[in-house]
Length: 93
Image (cartoon, rainbow, N blue to C red; front, top):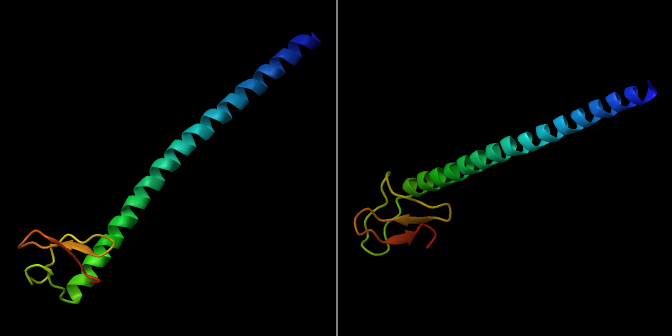
């Protein structure tokens, strides 16, 4: 009788341990996905702020002299693509 109780208790312990293991794996996967989504959103927000700052200062293209417009692509490092000559310039230069 004692062996049966021990085996049942051991079986419950194993099932609980396996259940917690699956929960940890699943939560890591979910939190990893959330982290990637938030990281992407922060990068896009930084790029949008850089673009907004650049358009507030009326930057111009180093190649053709055209001013930076609202729809210009601006990277987080300040690089932007001219919509007229399609060359890249930097707002910091």
